[in-house]
Length: 406
Figure 1 (cartoon, rainbow, N blue to C red):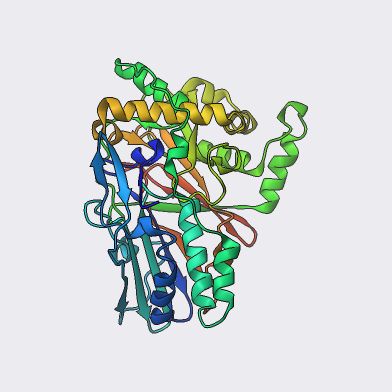
Figure 2: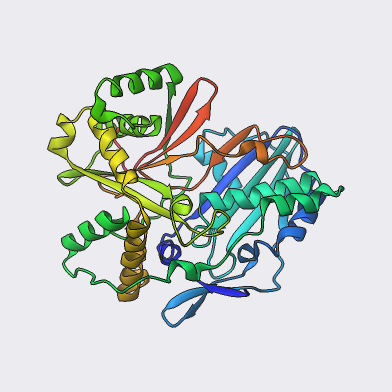
């Protein structure tokens, strides 16, 4: 395969304000840049979409074509001290925008007196979080074992990625797109978990505001035990309960307009879809959305909200995945970037996006000097919450709306 047409979900991440999947990783010991570059050269043919210079428009859709363009791994020697990893303003110097007309990915190593920062930025139109770390894990293993016979074995063990987007279009049919704005918003959210609103604003790391709170394992265990007191609530996971807790806290903290509140979370459908396999390199995510009126929200307990969240993910099956793909595809064909520029993963007026990164494969990101000491998701998504693991439980980082009450 030397080219592919972007899938419907890929197209949802195009248009004005489209953002990438971006992380920075701090390593206590300096990374060997030569080893990093050498190993990337050996696997770039497997993950060739990241080396493509730009996307091409063809018959109303976008396609990605394999090129001979070489994507370099940049290096900068830094004399300044390490940045504060909880400060978006300081971290902004180590993040880079993606221009889809020039490059679909950027890799940069910053060498400090004590350690290295690896900054990786890939267009969301060609990868989701799983694909992002699939690439990094294979890259890390090939770097670590580059001088041994294990290197070839590792690529075989991890497997060759699949780029066949056509599998996500096999059973799609055109569906009618509502013309009335309110009906269109409800139709999109109910079928895809995505929100349609005004055009995405210029939300950058410089004007981001982060806050963090921790939840201990004992607190989670207490919530789980409460949920098991009612047989109807059996099956609630710690993620459902923690998401509900986050929803309650942000509802109190953030201003929200309208008469309802929404929550979305990403569901990786590689495990349930009949079309894609576990090594699919692209977007295989479906947003699961919950909408609750403000009146109902105020009356709902944390367990009530957790049950709604559980139901939204539990209903994902092959039929709902196809319906999601059909709706996004039909929306794109009816309006293109005019619509995708208005698509949000979290409604900018009353939404919340919860992303669970508690199972990040950080141990597999050893490029020869050990696993990263610090991992920071850098995607500037307002009204979002990112869950990561800490020794005694979970840490929740909130990214506030552009205008948030003090």
